[in-house]
Length: 87
Image (tube, rainbow, N blue to C red; front, side, top):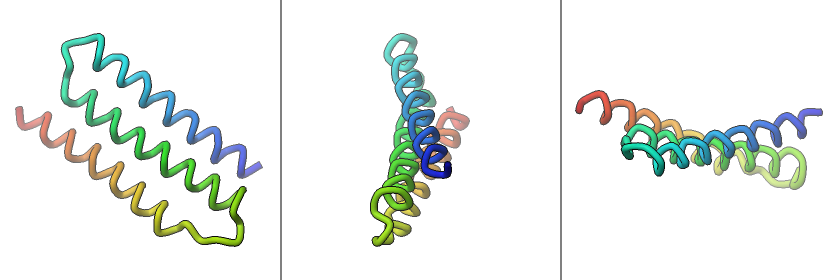
């Protein structure tokens, strides 16, 4: 059951990133939409790594890669929020 949740979280993050990218391309190209899109792609990568780590490759430890992807995604979101607020 846990593997299905990891996979659903990855798909949800990926769908959110694609929808944000579509809005960025269709609208006035707001930088916050772009930073959010990049951040959600990073979160989708983080969730996919969690699925691979816990469901497919149970003998290996991908916790460092998952942590790097999660921190990078959150830093991108934080940077986008701070940079867009300062405008």
